[in-house]
Length: 206
Image (cartoon, rainbow, N blue to C red):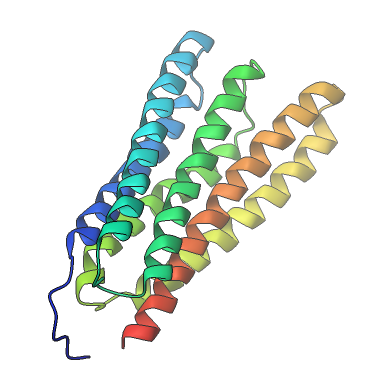
């Protein structure tokens, strides 16, 4: 543990935790959209949009603090990267929800639920990991599991796309569903980037 001779701003940990809790909200809203009728999907998408705005505000607060703080709990570039990558997770989930409504998709492939469940679990693990940044303890299992989940999501995406190309003859619908599926996979990738950032921070601070 490095000795610090000056006070540092620790509120970043609370801000990161707030960001991560919003990801849990976003992933759960996405799960609610599965099987929802069009009117319900629109209502959920509005809630998702609000969650995305809240996530943006939390990320901007981190940046504001960063510009005002002399001594930070860890490297300034890492703080910026972590806030940005947490925000990316929400952006992709919100985009997927928006596409479902904009494209008027009423029936999603059953395997979409597999990817959404991965996002829910990744969001929960990320929210649990944020408070541990204060001590950098017990984080290794987190980034290992997130990596496993991303691999799981990637396999589900490949199987889903293969199934779509086999079963759907409507080219427009196929392209719409493909974009939603790939956006969900991008969200899983974003969670992995968060985990990679935390691993990098932990190594530097150890």
